Length: 316
Ligand code: UDP
Ligand code: MG
Image (cartoon, rainbow, N blue to C red; front, side, top):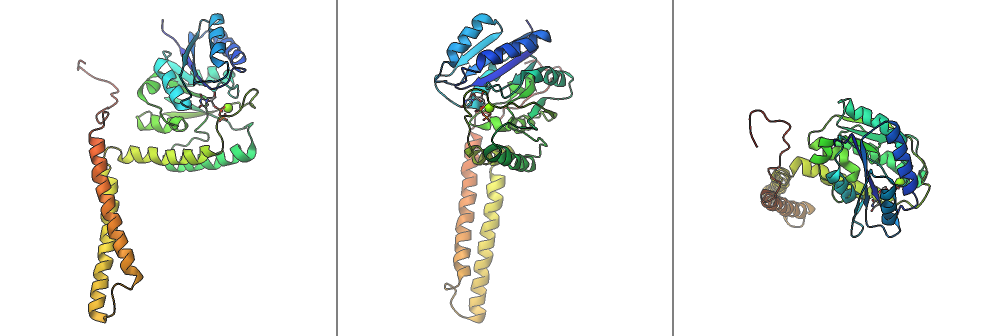
């Protein structure tokens, strides 16, 4: 049977929320007559989350479940959920009832309209701690928009909707769930939309992410931008800056030599000498790093992993 909708729910120690969440999702989906599935990915919970999933599966035949052997993180959980999803539209939602299932119909309609590959929720009004979360989040999203060029207000929102092909074409690993729109855009899915969504205070359990998220997130953003631009041609990065640095150091050395011969004095007791030396050494190291990086990217298994949109007259 062709499914309209897959709802992927990553969960870690959320046993209290699950019955309420499932009842709500079921109510919304039944009212809208969706052929749907809920894929609950238990990310190695230590409470009774898996028992709760099993009990709910007795009650609702729309539930599917995956349980990790241990806690791997939200990104791997989403990635497994994406692999299993069969609906034409895939919606991800946190398990903690902070995202409202009432948003499902509109998100679903936005994807089905064909106008979007991906729609991200925007928690315009947030019910989290103002100092540790809301303020840094504003700043963080600003930096995100600036570096990634994707104009989303709330990139890390757990509530998102995707066209099936998007989730089947991307890989979410590490802590990259914060940047799925960036990953999707890089895969060529650039019709990215946004929808203001209702956000609710956490009713049960505790948040799994603290302030470190902003530092780690920023580092991940830099990595992802770097990998996209230079992942397949690292020498273009390291070679350029290595050469520039080396030439700078070399130029300074020449200048020092010339000035020694014309104006006398010692060459080696000037600060410029040490700066020139260091710059040349660093430049060379940059250059060599470029070669090593080329070797690595040349032997990467996915070096020719293109995403083909359509074929004409060519058999697989
Ligand atoms: N989560 C997960 N694995 C983890 C951490 C979190 O699957 O290692 C899930 C968690 O259960 C929740 C969602 O990811 O469903 C978002 O987590 P949380 O509510 O703690 O984040 P916050 O809302 O505070 O940003
Ligand atoms: Mg939450």
